[in-house]
Image 1 (cartoon, rainbow, N blue to C red):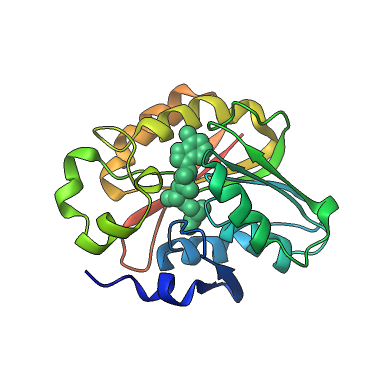
Image 2: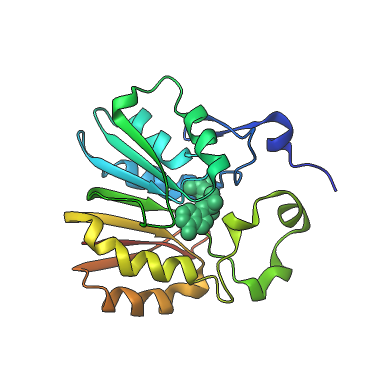
Length: 211
Ligand SMILES: C[S@@+](CC[C@H](N)C(=O)[O-])C[C@H]1O[C@@H](n2cnc3c(N)ncnc32)[C@H](O)[C@@H]1O
């Protein structure tokens, strides 16, 4: 099986930023780039942001490079990827970010205006739908999260409310099949309102949840 092109080159462009992939984080996806490009328009100067499940750090790097005077922390469980995020933050003022080793919110103390997340959400019982090269080369910790792919999302929705400032926004990328389960969790979570949004294939792909 051929190594993916992006790992051969060791980089991929994400919203105009060259993202280093030398430590083999998940290769940033076009569907992620799509919703991040929309959310970037809502982030105001001076906002405090969190890129949780950060991987390469592509989401937070886009915020810091595209919106002036923002702050962005990065949360990631995989120690190796903390170094990857640092590599991708080269050239950005070090007082604008922190890189935090964390299991979802376990080591995240603060509150944020924006929490942007692309958690692992592939269902273990749908492994046969994942392409062979992804299974062979991409980190499984970035892909799978329990039988229904919901384990990380359940914890995320349960705990994010207390990490959002008033009117703060939590964004979660997910699979269309998870929409109904996610809606039930949001309704139990104490949030003020939410909106499920479609991608360019007309599929529900991310949800905006307000604190
Ligand atoms: C789908 S990848 C997203 C990477 C990047 N944000 C992107 O959009 O390309 C999910 C990331 O979450 C990390 N992760 C998995 N479980 C986690 C947990 N419990 N707490 C924090 N990070 C976790 C994985 O190591 C992986 O880097």
